[in-house]
Length: 379
Image 1 (cartoon, rainbow, N blue to C red):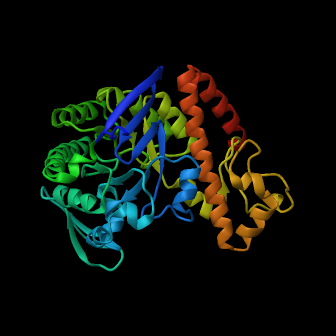
Image 2 (cartoon, rainbow, N blue to C red; image 1 turned 90 degrees about the vertical axis):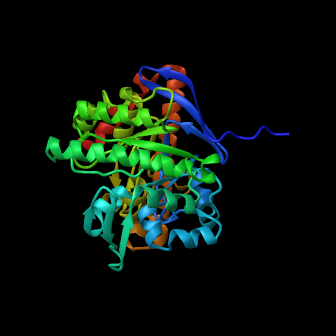
């Protein structure tokens, strides 16, 4: 008889500098880390079937509380059997709390200690998202990894504003955790806290200390990849991961570009998500080992080579740049599908390369070789 999978267990198999090679074991399966989570905002990884996302190497997807609560509605998803059944993905799903989208997309938001009242960007309907309601929605969706509800402010805000938002986020973190463990859903799933504090080391330390006092299954570094630039982001990652529990996974939210991911892995990050591979695919951009290319460019009209000669994906094995150029220029749906599939594969192969490098103690060499190659196309 097979041994049942644990609720949540993180094992570090090897380290190389600050980087960690690990496995997260959950009841819906194992997640190899460092891991990249394709984004399925509205219960779909855009232009991809779940089986094809899995074939690319993804162990876990990300869904979005804000979008799913507005359409089709969390209660409806629950009646239909939960998000896994609804979208046809049987492995782990992490749901973000909706806090970022409320701040960036919703109209007429009103923030208070209770939560955030807002008008939907879809139809103007009024809603209230509090820590308790965010956790309830994620429970209704059947999330494998639930995120605490937090308040995000721009990194350009004053330190006073950043401190107030961080402190409120920490109060909301405790309320989120209490709501999570008040429900039987917690017996099979996990909850992560989110560190805030913008670019300030002192605020980040205070946030980490508060989160550790509450206690979570994993910890996210939030509030980055919001326009501060790679150098500033790496500056925070030089100290922020080390402020968190080294025995728990560290998740950098909303990141990012391939070279962002490589640098963040070197600084001790274990999990990532970003819309970039799917959004870029739909707009004609492909990621390659020598940098991103725009397949719309006329120079590809008769190029019979694959998108990336080093890529093992089905797209590169079957179709030429010329064909993809034609599909994208003609506005054919298949063009968006194939470009997205290649990009999802590119990200997953990159993660496997990084995992292999950490296990072999060669991360610095592999990372430097990647950057040297990837810089070529950037000029």
